[in-house]
Length: 324
Image (tube, rainbow, N blue to C red):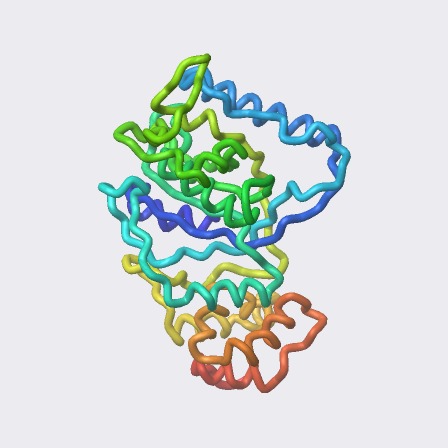
C-alpha cells in the first residue's frame, strides 16, 4: 500500500480515492499468544475511539481460537478503478465505468488471487471518526458480495489518511453481520452527519429500548490487526492505471525501463514482469485467454520457465534490444 499512500501525498490527502485489494484468504492455526496480543491491541484502539464516540468497536469474533479458519488476509496487489474525486459526493469520489473490470478479475484469477478487500484514502478526520456512513455501507456491500450473502467473511476495509504529525495512519476494519443484514435490507442511508448511518423511515432501530433514527458508524465496526507483508510473487514498479494526474503513465517506454533492469541487481526478466499493473497493461496487446494464462503460470511458479517466444514478443513490444 506504500505506493497508494505516496500518490495520496501528492494531494496532501485532500482528495478521496479508493482501490480494490487482491490477494488470498489463508487458513492458519490460531496461536493463542499471538491472538491474545492482537485482541489486546484491537481492544486498546477500540477503547481509544470509544472514549470520544461512545460506540462499540470491538467484538470477539471467534471463541475457539485454536480452530483452523479463514481469518488471515494476504494482499498481493491493489487495483484502482476509474474514478473522479468529488468532495460533494457522500463517498468523496464518483466511480466511473470500467472497461477493464472483467480483464482485472480474469488476470487476478490466473494469478491465483481474488478480491479480498478495498482501501480508501481520505482527508484527516477528528479523533475517533473512523469511517463515514457511505464507507460503512460500501464496506457492507462488498462483504455481502464476497460472502454471497449475510455470513462471515474475512473481507477487509482499510482506511488511509495522515495524522497531525504528518505520519500516515492506516487501519483495517470489518463491519458486523448486523450491518450487512441492514444494508442487504436497504435499511441504512447516508444523511447530513457522516458519522452516523441514518435508518430508512420504513425500518425501526431500537437503541437502549427506544427507537432511534440513526446509528453511530462505530457501532458496526470491528478493528482488524494489520501486519507488514512483502510479496514474494509480485513487484509494484509499473505506473498504475486510471491516474489522470500522475506524473507517470503506462507506456511502452515505461515497460522498457522496467524490463531493462533484467540481469542487474539480481533481477530476472520474469521477476520484473511479475507486476500486476504491467501484466494488466500487457492484456491490451496479448491474448488474455491464450497468452496470459501461460505467462501467469511462470509468475506464480518460478520453477515454470517463461517460454522464449513470449520473452521475444514482450521485449519487442517494449522496444528492447540485445539480451534480456
